[in-house]
Image (tube, rainbow, N blue to C red; front, top):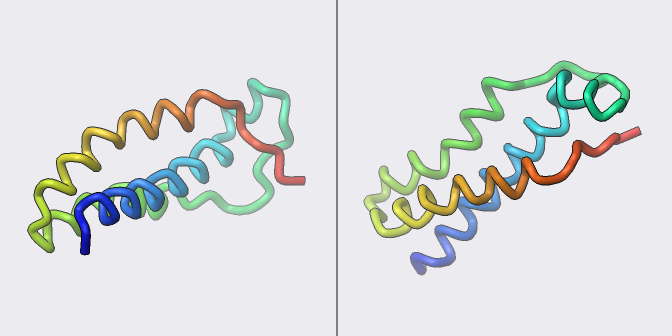
Length: 89
């Protein structure tokens, strides 16, 4: 598979996990005056899913895609932190 495609797919997975973590964070929801998260939070699983693409890229020895994912991962985190959480009611 193409290196850029692998990097992009890895970033999408990490982005989705970071969005879940942001939207379900109780302290952040309280600051923005949103209702509390209704269901159980799966923080450890979301953190694993967030970092799993990097582990996968290393396991398949696609080091260039790993380096690009690692560099862009912090930018994705800043993009996620930029907006307030979404109220899913």
